[in-house]
Length: 156
Image (cartoon, rainbow, N blue to C red; front, side, top):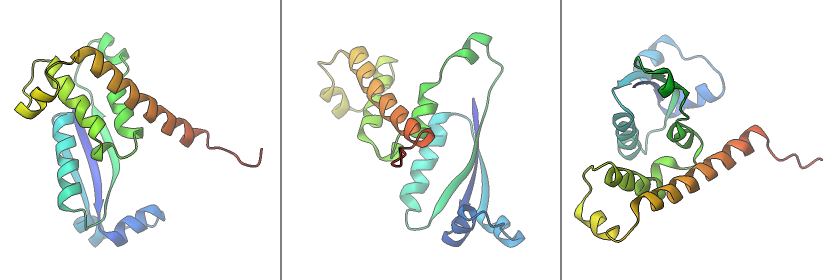
């Protein structure tokens, strides 16, 4: 699956975006950029990198799309809970629990993890722990989603 993102850079331009003010042609050339990513991991690494490198310069992802490859109908019907977590989990890119899930997922799939992580999880039931971690992440993401869709109305 490919990912496409449109990002606006610059404090004044991000402010304009939030205020629904149009960017001029010069701002569109300089401050509005489009990126293509081959996979979710590449996209996540890019976002993390610009967040760390450009933390002092304001930016905002204003559009993001997934381009699906030709897949079986069964794959299309599956719920991609990670896309939901990425969208609604608060502070997704700065969360140790998300990192732990990634480590456990790589371990469960036979991927490489560093020696320190290997030592840390050596006596764990990896599948069971991954289930609990992902369940916690999904629950908090759903709570955040629910509060966005149905905010508390203090006047009731």
